[in-house]
Each structure stands twice: as C-alpha cells, then as structure tokens.
Image (cartoon, rainbow, N blue to C red; front, side):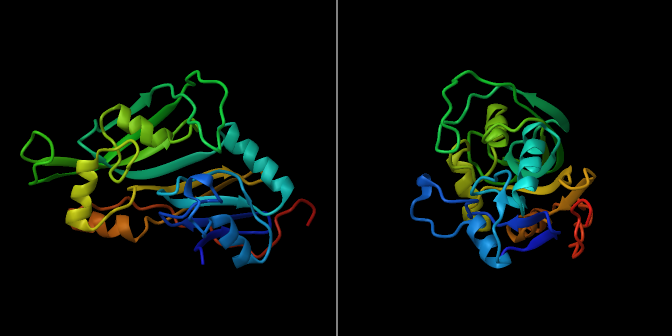
Amino acid sequence: MLPILYKDDRVVVVAKPSGLLVHRSPIDRHEKRFAVQMLRDQLGRRVYPVHRLDKGTSGALAFALDREAAHSMAEAFGTRQVRKTYLAVVRGWPDEAGEIDHALAAVRDEYAPATDAAAKPARTTYRRLATVELAHRVDRYPTARYALVELQPDTGRRHQLRRHLAHVSHPIIGDSTYGKGRHNRLFAELFGVRRLLLACVRLEFPHPATGETLCVAAPPDGDLDSLAARLGWRLPCAPAPAAISPASTSPGS
C-alpha cells in the first residue's frame, strides 16, 4: 500500500517510493507495479495523476479523484501555481545558495514526443544544507566531497533537476543517466544505496475546490534518513503533513 499523506473527496497525495513508476511505460516493459494502479486498488476508485515523479525519485505525488479536479490541478501544475521542494545528495560542494538558469530541450520519450527541438527556459533555485568529505579517492583528488541540497524548480521541464545539477557539475548521486558512475558506485559500496538520491519533500498547490493553498509534506524515506544519519547530517524539519479530511470539500456540499 502507498502511504497516504493527505486525502479528501477531491485530492489525494501519497508518498511514492523510489523505484516505482507512476504509470505504465514502454521504457520499463517488465514492470508490473504502478502508482496509479496501486492507488486505484487501494482506494477502490479511479484516480487521475496530475504530475509525475521519475521512477527513481521518491516523495509527494498528487492525484485528483474526479475529472473536474484533475483539470484544475493539471492547470495549476502547468501554469506554475505549484511550489515543489526537493532534497538531493549531490557530488561536490555547491555555493551556499543560488539559481541555475539554463534552457533545456525537450526529452523525447513516450511522455513528450516533442516536435519542437528548441530549448525552453528552465530555472531552479537551490540551498546547500550540509556537506561531507569522505576519505576516498574517486576522481583525481584524494578525498570526495558531497552535499545535501534543497531544490525548488521554478519551471517544470522533464528531468529538470537532474539535468540542471549535472549542468553545474554537481550531479545527483544515483543518477545513472546524467550522473557519474564512479560516485554512484562509491555510495553503493559504502552505504548500500543504489537509488537516485532525490526526494520531493513538500508540495504546495491550490486546492481544486476551495482555491486555498494546500501544503503537504513528505518525510524523507528510509534510505535518505539512514544515509543522513551515517553522514552526520540533520535533515530539515518539514511542516506537519496535512491531515486526512473525511469531510467533503466540494462546493455546495
């Protein structure tokens, strides 16, 4: 079962684990488990995904529970009315804070069969939360540096965070597409972590019925939590998850 972070009669937000697809994909034909199907079976009703998390990314994933709510939420996600906050472990020590303003071309796959190859504006702000230096030679230096960062994408390009961090030479650990295999292998050997170290820890979006901002927190999952403890990092305290509401929030109810 998927942990439910928030639920009312229009919206449900779950904690997606790393390694789970949101829905069926030709890229992973062998996979038989999908968040959409799992949540549908769990709730006994149809659910409507309104945004995506990559297979390797964990954290808060929102669904609508009816077509009208799905349209409203999809519009909010598509018009930058949503604030998403992520935690990631990256190679190197980025500046304490900054922004990455780097246009990105569409990733061509079954989700985005883009005909327009032109790069589109993409912007990510970040804040460095903690650092560590490990006594292991990975590149040309005798030690290896890593950091915990908080990320907020201001745009919603596909793989934006992974591509932006790689662009500034701070790829996310565990990223087999845009990252560095030597650093990924080190974390697998030292800590037993073989996943993408990226998690959506907070979603803020207008509720489709009331228009009021709904803030839902997703505590970092076990992999990130245990890794942070081993590295001596203290993960930031997230706001308390929104309560599950049994009452109807539809207009006129």
